[in-house]
Image (cartoon, rainbow, N blue to C red):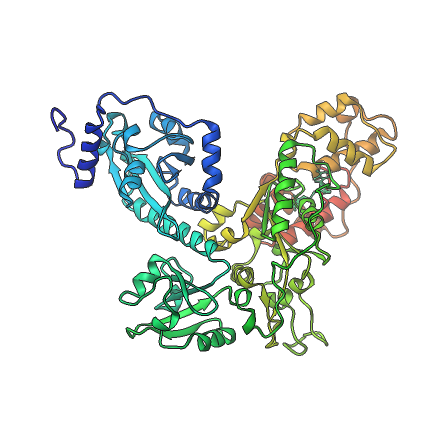
Length: 617
Ligand SMILES: Nc1ncnc2c1ncn2[C@@H]1O[C@H](COP(=O)(O)OP(=O)(O)OP(=O)(O)O)[C@@H](O)[C@H]1O
């Protein structure tokens, strides 16, 4: 390699990459200026890789939390090595290297010399490039781990990279990157085959819902359409390839297998080599109506064309208007919507709007996940047959999911959903069939799912409080409502709320301008409380700047019991300390969100228009 002496030893892959760089005339001491694609090209590439990107972003957040605190960044590249997205640690963000790794950056070998993202794309294999193994000296301080993401047909769908300062190098980072890639690949496989039967199998039942399970897509006659890499690994020596038949792999007949799958969630199968597997089909009832106990009611049944979105709340902020379009598109396709945003930003209003524009004639059924009882959850959701358990009502109960049939199920505070319920919900999302407790009959429901949360679900995934696979299923369409302080339509919202509070009340522009400068941690809900107080204080005169600083009216009488008062004070104090975050308050006090709500509501009844503002919802 001529005068270039560093590093002393190079692996064959990296040496070959260096040779390619030298042949192309690159000089390790004189890197060319980094090249960036323009914004339109990045947008177009992001659109083209929309699904990979959506699955990858969820994984990148996971990865971020797994390796956080170690001075690093995570990047998603398109198949050719152009960076589409990055998530960067605060410490790393300020480094010169990090500044070069940003959306639009071209990280092919010929642009940036030997580097993990470019090399993984060229080699179609995972690779680590450590310190001086980088061709350009300016990247000597980095350790990069990159792995290609393969699409279901074997093509490269993207590249996932985790780069860090090489002094904070962590040996297990590559293993984590590969796990994330597997998760994304499984997501791509399941999405592509959502209308085929997807058999999930493993030699051990406890690994059925893990990354190491094999996925096999077959059509309703049993002909193989595709096999994941892990499925091909399990079925080595057998023709697990498109065009072959289920019967060439397993000893049980395909129809017998389907019949048994309708009776049980998991079925045992033995392959022709003698290996035994536990197999589940999540979307059996959706794909195979012939074998249903009941007449199907597919989700894809034609439904009235969605109406033009015209919400009955204020949505004149351009960011919110764009969300309305997304919501209308999602309901037209019947895909789940996840609404995020801080407390009081209008998530429930948006969910109701989703129901209104969907054109669905069934009910809008709100469920507060934090308030669901720990026991009898299934009965609550899926209903129960008469006599199913002690205390069951005569005639049984319909269940919330059933009530939402033909309509919308709104799962509020989804981040507080008990883990036990999460796996039940996951199964429901796969086939939309329910079986009331104590009944043997299954039935398919047609439900638009909308979930909402102000919790950090990625963090909840990290701490094991929320299932990652459920998050991916729920966030098919994810929208985030902006905090009130960032909204461009603040004035319109304030006037609208004031009109609802008291149609005769009015407010001066100066007062509105002052209000618009406040931080509004409680968002629209807090604004409503403050306007209620102002309307009372101004007593029918125009609300002006002078009313804003008027002393609050004296507190209403305390509740009867001092003990109750002490409890409420404790809840209120914790609520204030946690930035008025109900989830955090509940966590700190070790009670349910519902308890916090109840106590705060009691508080708001006796401090109706006090300085803290009331709680309402
Ligand atoms: N854009 C808006 N226009 C008018 N009123 C609004 C708007 N957004 C929210 N509100 C009002 O603010 C209050 C809170 O809204 P909502 O309950 O939908 O918020 P949320 O985000 O679901 O709150 P939480 O996270 O606490 O459950 C309601 O009284 C609602 O009517």
